[in-house]
Image 1 (cartoon, helix red, strand yellow):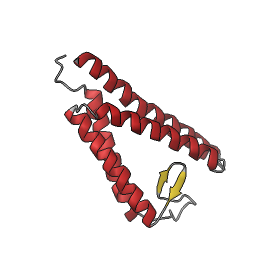
Image 2: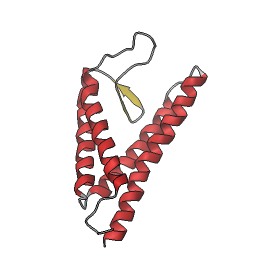
Image 3: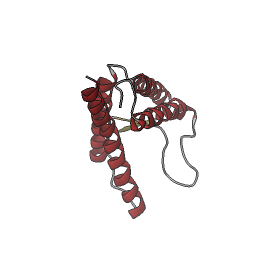
Amino acid sequence: MPASKRPVALTAFAILFALMAIEDFLKPFGRTQRPDSGMSFGIMFFGHLLQGPCAAYVGWLIGAFLLVYAVAILRMSSYALMLAYVYGVYVVLNVAIFTFTSPPPTTRGEMIFGIVYRVLAIVGAWTAVILLRRRNAHAG
């Protein structure tokens, strides 16, 4: 593969990160409560569910970071790997703090969802790091 080519998997990650950025930009405009459940909507920041104006500011900051990260991957910029590490550490800390500070799930379905979500979040963030490291190693 030529050094200038971006692997398909990294393109997929860039698209996913861009979609996550859009979701974070839109979170402050969503409903705060689903009528059919007790689940609150907002943005999770270092284990704390933020809502209202604070969620708007943090959501826009995280969304902007994810958008820059996605563009860095698409352009195969030299700083993409650094952003990948920052995001990977943020995800691990966010998941860990949330796990230790939140009440345990009340149903089996919530427990399974929580485990699957946490695993996918951490594995996804660090898979992007691994792919970018491999790409950098092959490029030069």
